Length: 179
Image (cartoon, rainbow, N blue to C red; front, top):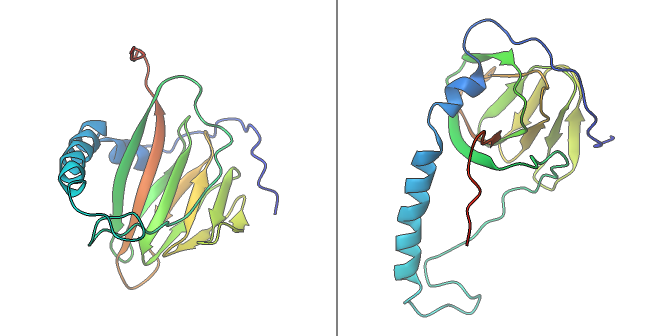
């Protein structure tokens, strides 16, 4: 399957509140607080003696998935990390936004209806589906949605779905930090 991203005209938004608008409501400040707290914990952990693999005892790192991004914003942007949960039968209407998004399914199977400009990646990084239609995204897999691509989410299963959603949102009017 071709994984080349090409520009597509922006599809019309659905009426009502979009999935991304709901997800972006959490904001980047919560992520900043969480990362700051993790930094304090990491500083304490650095005092511990590293294990043979370079990590302190009790610390593990597990790579989840790697997804190529060919349409990274060129101006300053905010990275928004949100957890989406869907009970069985729940859905979020199709919508589109002018920035890239990745949804990594933690548990269950996320079904993503929508248009062109979407690619589903298996845990080993291979593309398992792309283009329009309903795409199942099982646990350990992810879907990449290009800017302006129509996308939605629903849970067709009998168990809850949990997914981590990463949005690369342009930071309009953001000042560039200086050293």
